[in-house]
Length: 53
Image 1: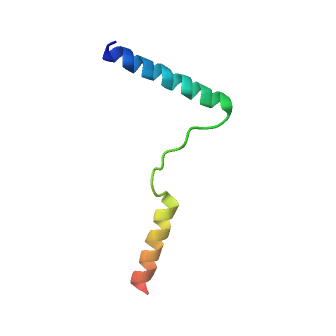
Image 2: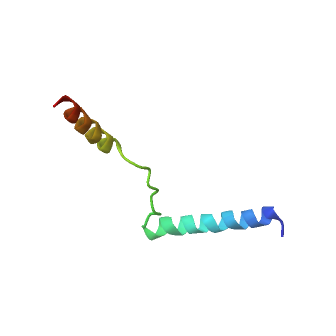
């Protein structure tokens, strides 16, 4: 078997998994992207309050 065949098998397996997740109603786990906009806003407000009081 060549590397191309292995990667094709992996891709087909991934597509089957992805399709089965869509049909089951559950979603694949979401990747953690870090702090959101609200978190940064709160942190900046706290820093401003501490600096100016």
